[in-house]
Length: 201
Image (cartoon, rainbow, N blue to C red; front, top):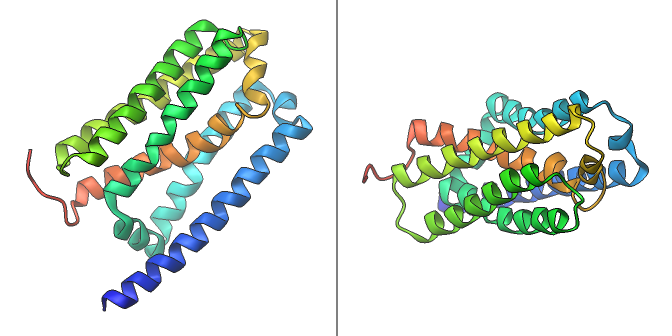
């Protein structure tokens, strides 16, 4: 039985990695040819939201995908967010070169940095429902604040916001945010159902 589960997990991982690679290449190509620069700011927010909604809809509709996410579990979903430390460093670099508004850098950069460190800590510590819940609540709230701040500056026509429409920064809102935001929602569902999770506080 365990061998069957491992085979399904391995197959699921290959499919997921394939989808993620195609998604990353599509975002990079769109940024390179100037698609994001040609899109109205409110539509950019829609594209970012779609990056979250798409995987969540797939999760809701596909029993196999839900089973795969349950198999990899909360620790893997949480550990993925360690990438946000690197995202924060990119935000800080852009901010230091005045390529993004200062408030946006502060909100998005420090939020990602803290979220990444929290993800690292939660992953290394013994797993409890409360640790995972606190991390995923904070991480999702960080996305809401960062996207809201970015959209505000877009609507104010701040020319420095053009930085997120080009590489490598475009990979954060149009790729990383979608995957991370969706993984938060999936984690909330796993926490709600608590499969194999200790009730320790």
